Length: 110
View (cartoon, rainbow, N blue to C red):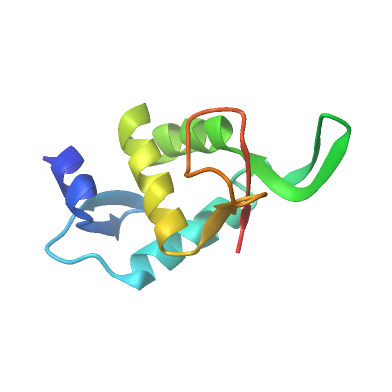
């Protein structure tokens, strides 16, 4: 039920959690974005990979962990939500090369 709602894009916030809704809105995406950026949100910081510094970014697998913990999603559902955030231009891969993945890829907020 929730999984299909996520797959269909039918999400809304209720008590700071994603739940199925008849319609999804950009306001729901923005609320999630703000929550991810909050003090209780993602660990955003500078990271290095292969001697290159990437500023103000987060790790995809850590974002999945956070979505699972705070939104009650499965890991697969959390990846779908992350990909929706990419499609809504809320987040992007630091090099623009990857869709959202449950892996050690860096993303930042747009």
